[in-house]
Amino acid sequence: MRLLNIETMRMEEFFDETVASYAILSHRWGQEEVSLQEWNRRKAGYSKIVSCVEMARNQKISRGEEVHSCSFVWIDTCCIDKTNSAELSEAINSMFRWYRNAMVCLVYLVDIPTNLGPDEMESKVRKSNWFERGWTLQELLAPQSVKFFNRCWEFLFDKTEKSDLIKEITRVDVRVLRDRDILDVTCTAKKMSWAASRTTTRKEDLAYCLLGIFDVNMPLLYGEGDKAFVRLQEEIIRQSGDPSIFAWGYNSSEDNATSGIFAPSPACFIGCYNIIDYGEGVGPSRAVITMNNITLSVKLSYLRPKTDRLSFIYAYLCCSDDPENLIVLPLVTNLDGGHSQFGSDVESTMSVWFERRAGTRPIVIGDRLVIETEIWMHESRTISVLKKEHGERFQYSDVIYLNGVNHPSSKAVVEEIYPPHFWGKRAKTLEFDSNYRCTWYPGAIELETGFYPSAKPECEYVAYIRISHRNHKRGEMVLIVRQLGSARERDIEVRVANWTICGYESLADIAQHGRLNNQYEDSSEVIGSGVKRIEFCGFMVDYSRPTITISDYPSSESSGS
Image (cartoon, rainbow, N blue to C red):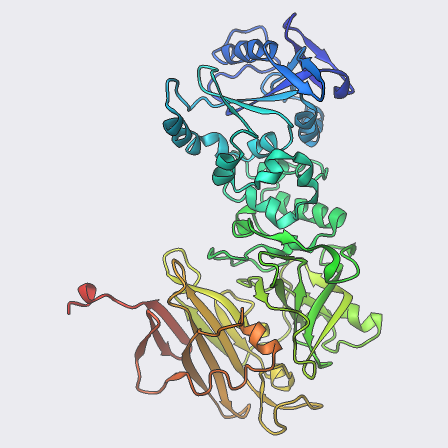
C-alpha cells in the first residue's frame, strides 16, 4: 500500500497498512486528476490533494479512551500505479480492507455548494452524484468513521449523525451504517440491492467494486463485460452458500429475458432491499457442493409435487421480507439432463437438471408447514441447476405468445405462472409439450382418473398467469389458459378472473393448499370465439390465437366518448 506522508508530501510504501494511521479520500474523479507518474506536475487536481492533506492533519479520531491523529493519506488517483496491471489488481482486491482500516474517510462532495441552510443542504445531498457511483458504496460501508464535506471543504455531517438521511438515499440499513460489523451477517440479496441503481464507467467495475463488500477475491479481466458479474456471483455462492443470491427479480417490475440461475447485473436486485436472512430454519445446509461450466450443484430445501415424474420445484431461498412468508424460486426440470424421473437414489437425483427460465421471478408463499400433504412434500437434497440456458431436444406442440407484458412501455407485469413448467424458454411465451400431458401437478385436470395423482394420468394443459399493473395493484388479474380435449383434437380456451384471494400470497400458495382446481371455475369469464377483446381489471385483453395481447384500457378521452 502506497501512502502519502502529510508532513513531507512524499510517497511511502507499507506491506501492512495496520501499522500506519491514515485518512482516506472518497470523491468523484474530475478533470486533470494527478496520477502517480504525474506527481511532480501541478495539475488542476493537485489542489484537491492539498486540501485533503490539510483536512487530514486536523482530524482527531477517538478510539475508546484514546485519541488518534493521522500521519498519512491514501488517495486513489495518485497512490496506485495504474500502468501496472498487477498492482491495480492487488489494489482493487484490497481496497475494501484499506478503507476499513483507515482512521477516517473524508468524503468530498464537489457538487454541494457552500452557505446552505440545513434543509437546502439535505436536498442537495440527496441529489449528489457521489451516491450514484458503484465504487463509493464500499467507501460508505467499510470505514468506521466517515465525514462529509462540501466543495469548499466545509464539514457537513458524519455517517452516524445522518444515518437516517443516508438510508433514504441509498436504502442501506441504519444498523449497518452505525455498526459496520452487521454487514458481515447481512444476506447477499439485500447487499446487492444497495448497488442496483449505481453505475460505473466500465461495465466490469460493476462487479469489481463489490468484491470487498462480499469478502471475495478474483482476478480482474477487463474486456470480459457482463461475465465479470457472473463470475462474482459464482465466487459469492461458492464461499457463502447463501441462496438469497438467487432472489434477483423479486419485487421488481423490470423485464428480464435472461435464462439462467445468475443475474445479469446488480439492477436485478433492486426489489430486494427489505429482504432478511432467516438463517438455517429451512434446510440443514446452504453449501455449494460442485460447480462446472454447465451446472452448479447446491443443497437446497424445496417444495415439490408428490410425484416421481417431476416437472418443477419451489426452492426455498432462506430469506423473506415478512416473518410470516417465505421467498421461493420456481425451478423447472430440463429434459436434456437425461432423466425426468426423480428417484430416491443420489444418482437419479443428480441426473435431473433444473433451470430458471427467462422471465421467472421469485414468489412468496405462506407458512411452509401448512400444505396439502397428499399432493405436496418437502425435501432437502443436492440438486443440479443450469448456470445458463441449455439446448432443448423437443418441439412444443402449442405456443401461446403474451404480448404487451414485461416491457418498459407497457403497464402489465407477469408476476407468476403456475405451473412454472409452462413458462416458455423463449421470453413471454407459454409453451405446451405433449410430454407434459403425462406429467401430473397439483391443480392439473385429469381426463380419466380424477383429482389425485395416478401412475400415468393424461391431463389437460391448464396454466394460470397472475398479472399486475406496473404502477399499482388494483389492476391485478389472473389469466387461465386451458387446452381442451385430447392430444389430437385440442382447442385453447382463455379465461380472465380477479386476483382477490384473501389469505394467499401467490398462485403457488393456493396450489400448496390443494385449492387451485375450483378456485376460478365459477368466477372467471371466457374470451370465446367471436369475442375480439374484453376489458377487465383496467386492462384490455385480446385473444387471437396464438397471441394474447394485454394493454391499458383506454380512457373516455382517448376513446372519444
